[in-house]
Length: 147
Image (cartoon, rainbow, N blue to C red; front, side, top):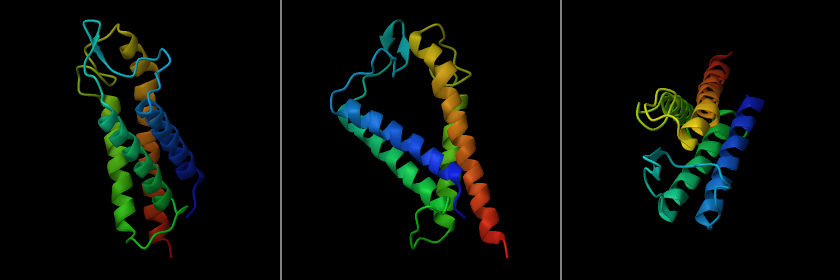
């Protein structure tokens, strides 16, 4: 199965990975708050190492979805990319729900620039990526079960 949804999701993951590499290299967010705020101050200061780890994880997510979607082939058993894609989908849906304080649709800290961006872009993107990953996994499972 080669599904265009898998390619679309992988391209978004690659773009997000590239953005994180830009930040690792010293780039700035361009006025879009990338970190939650508490009392007008960033809740944490992401370092280069942690930002690079996120960039690598996003690149790995892209590859995982490409393998599950049948666009990239590997010698891995089918269940590994399937369950990894299910895990990705679950993770991103949970990110959209949030931890009920700083991020997600159900956050309690509102009214900050980050909170507005999170409500209107970051969390909806996480829902789309999460549900998309789950759909790719479902399609892969159906394709492997087909006669």
